[in-house]
Image 1 (cartoon, rainbow, N blue to C red):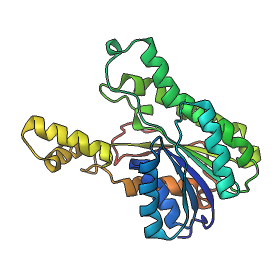
Image 2 (cartoon, one colour):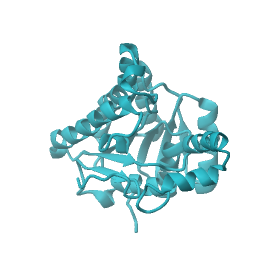
Image 3 (spheres, helix red, strand yellow):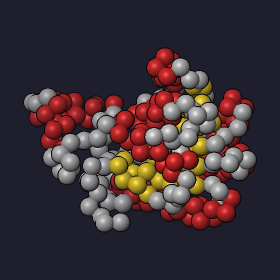
Image 4 (cartoon, helix red, strand yellow):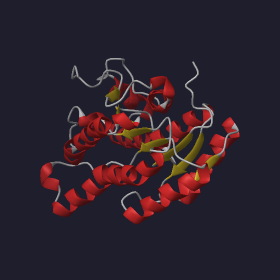
Length: 263
């Protein structure tokens, strides 16, 4: 199936590793021209070189802190210059720390909101003037199943992430007449570097192996396993593509059935 992404101009944030990197790779495999961004330039350059070696398509890098408004503006402007325009924006940021309500003071709440909500707002706000010039503009927010179903010991994430989904739904209505699509994607437990480190820690504590811990983690998922970054990226890139041109305003779980809600 041709997704219609040949030469599409794409920016993916928080993309030096994990779900962001997998998404950037999938875009490149589809023939898109991609800018990847995170705080670490060496990590970005390493990821970019691996993608280019595999796909042969250009991947550009720009280091930026998505909690810094001026850094976001520079990122968007530079991405527009490097790509000659902007068709697709994938907003992604690291999650806030784990813990219960009693673990956090107001500074923690402000910091978590800056990272988990305001980063998406600022990225979109600075990108919109460029996206309005594209005939196939799309924005995708990478969120979490915590937006749909609270996750144990993730009070900050459970509280703030639903606001991102609400933002994207609202924008899908506000900008529908301009042809800009806004969607959210909600990853469940996925085999990223972060999950690998978590499984290694659990294995050390339980005198087991990371593979055994992954199997245990998959037992609560109806499909019986955790997901792969490639499976997530396939869904993310489809939502951004012209092949999904009549889809806007949705929040799609990619979680093997982990979310129990019907909606």
